[in-house]
Image (spheres, rainbow over the protein chains, first blue to last red):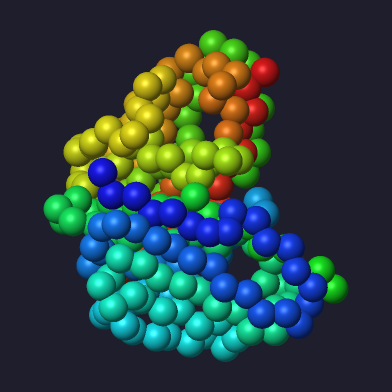
Length: 112
Length: 112
C-alpha cells in the first residue's frame, strides 16, 4: 500500500516567517501534486511536479520533487495571513489506477 | 471556468433517511470521485467511477452507493443515514490522475 506522510500536521506562525512542509513516502510516484483547501471549500490544485529534482515556483511558494520521486516539499517565503489553510500533497501512484493517494494534510495558520 | 458543482453546501438529515448527494462536472472528465473528510482522518475515498455506469469501491464504501447514468453526473447515496456519516463530502473529477483533480466546494452533511 502506498502512503504519503506529511509533516508537520499543524503549523502556527507569524506573518513574515518562512516555513517548509514535507511530504514523504517509501514509494515512487510518477507525479506529485499540492493542493490548498480553505475552510468550508474544496481543495484547489496549486502545482504538479513530474520530474525527479524538479523545482516549481508560484509567487512565494516553492515546490520541489525529490530526486527519487518519493518525496516533495513546499516552502513558503514571508508567509501572509492569506496563506492560511490546509495543504495536501497527493501522489499519482503505480498501477495506472487513476486514483491519487493523499497525505493527511498540514494545517497552516499565519497570524497577522 | 471549469467547474465541479455539488448540489448542496449544507444538509441536515434524520437518522434512517435516504440521502442523495449530487455532483455535476462540465469538463467532460471520465473519472469522478466521492470522498469524505473528517478532522484527523484526512480524505477518505468512498467510491469512484471511470466511465458511465461503471463504479469501483474505494476505501470506505460501507453504507454508501453511487450512480453514474451520465458522464457529467455522479451521485452519492446514503441508503439509511446514520450519525457517524456526519461529515464533509467532496466530489472530484479528473481527466487522468497525473493531471490533478478538480474538487467541488463540498457538502457538509449533518445527520441527527
